Amino acid sequence: MGRLIVIEGLDGAGKRTLADGLAAELDRRDRSVVRAAFPRYGTDVHADLVAEALRGAHGDLADSVHGMAVLYALDRHGAAGTVREDLQQHDVVLLDRYVASNAAYGAARLRQGADGDFVSWVSELELERFALPRPDLQILLQVPTALAAGRAEQRERSDAERRRDRFETDSPLQQRCAEVYTELAEAGWWSPWRVVDGAARVDFAELADVSLGELTRE
Ligand SMILES: Nc1ncnc2c1ncn2[C@@H]1O[C@H](COP(=O)(O)OP(=O)(O)OP(=O)(O)O)[C@@H](O)[C@H]1O
Ligand SMILES: Cc1cn([C@H]2C[C@H](O)[C@@H](COP(=O)(O)O)O2)c(=O)[nH]c1=O
Image (cartoon, rainbow, N blue to C red):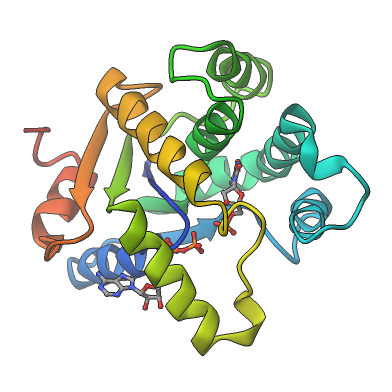
């Protein structure tokens, strides 16, 4: 049985870049890694609806915190079978965003904390009702909000396809979201967490050890 490793963090934090580095280190150790990112744009209709709503389509859909969260959750519900199969066949399944993104962004939008009603609702929907595979480790890539925003802007400048959406341009939302993520990690919500300082050099050897369960948390 493979290990399910999730990378979480703000928009522009550098999650995909971190996933590249971790996957390269695992590959160097001859571990088979399969990767996915949520939302699954271009693959799942719920993910595409989310992307369209965040850019102003579908009337007031994006205003509904629970409505958007259900779409994100249905995308994962549709992927759960594949994740389970991949866990049978690979050493590591590495995900860029998963259920905690729903918990953190939704709670932040509603100005709640990790102990609030919204996170409980996400737990009931995605952990209990959908019974999504539980991560072995959730990695929180923690960066100052301004740095994440700067990285997202830099990427927007270099990639016209990656225009920032409604959440990405909302700095107060990102700040509240960072706080909820920290609370989720401190509470060990749903799995063990590892907090990685994204403003510093990342020790990929150590992160691979932790991901493989060969080193326990500090
Ligand atoms: N450690 C780093 N140092 C400097 N720049 C970085 C670092 N990590 C990522 N970047 C740059 O920041 C930008 C955003 O990185 P990346 O796409 O990995 O973020 P992300 O968290 O996956 O973003 P999103 O969730 O919005 O898709 C990219 O231009 C990337 O090259
Ligand atoms: C998976 C997921 C994502 N979100 C939020 C986080 C981002 O602001 C956007 C889109 O994600 P991307 O990484 O920028 O493509 O959606 C969310 O609120 N809930 C989720 O489950």
